[in-house]
Image (cartoon, rainbow, N blue to C red; front, side, top):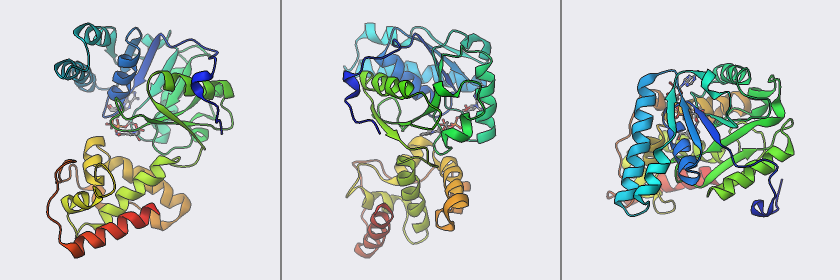
Length: 307
Ligand SMILES: NC(=O)c1ccc[n+]([C@@H]2O[C@H](COP(=O)([O-])OP(=O)(O)OC[C@H]3O[C@@H](n4cnc5c(N)ncnc54)[C@H](O)[C@@H]3O)[C@@H](O)[C@H]2O)c1
């Protein structure tokens, strides 16, 4: 575990010039927008297998910058620079000169392995390649790569364009200089990197996923809006609001199935995650009235799973 201030580190690599994000779904474009707004001079390439995902992702970046200007948080000139040199493509061959590729495609081990094998055939052996997996240990994703020391997991949290947390996984084959570089680059771009062991679901998803799963187990006795209205006594946003924001239902099913298979049935995901797309709930700052005994039941279970 590294404890030295990352900002006092002298990096062995310069800041990246060309970054690619693989997967332009829920979180990929947000990771790209965070990097582009922190380092507007870089080239950013978004890669997907579906053109509509790319079209929506590029529009999302434009919309974020437009809102930032309207709220006085970004100048017109900076917004133009942030949205310059962002390209969407279906073609991995355009990534040849990338110095960092971040994979944020669907949570599936064999898919991620295929993507990284394809990437290794395109980028240089020095290029950093990292995965935004929520749960899959780095060792399982990367151990068959030709050059694993430049590969690890960099795990962002929704909304990734402004949520400061990012886990950097320290696994057996990563070059320690890569971990030091990632800590440095995240700090200089406004993130808070947390170096984490290579366990299934790492550190924060072991907390977050089981918090959400416990909340889902309460449904039937308590509604999603009642759970969120109780949870805001001790967190900024309730589990169902955050699940909507992150489109997290399929992810919890994957991550908690992995934990259940490896560590015990008590992790098994609630079946309701498979049939619900969006929860009916209230945003942070709004609460519905919750009967005292209902709130007590929700409070005990939510705090209990955290402890
Ligand atoms: N959603 C979140 O808030 C969140 C948070 C942390 C980590 N993650 C992780 O990030 C990853 C992506 O999650 P998501 O919620 O954005 O998923 P998503 O389903 O919204 O998007 C995945 C995208 O990957 C694309 N894709 C599939 N195969 C591809 C391939 N071979 N090449 C390029 N693109 C491909 C899909 O077309 C889709 O657009 C997952 O591993 C997830 O566990 C997500």
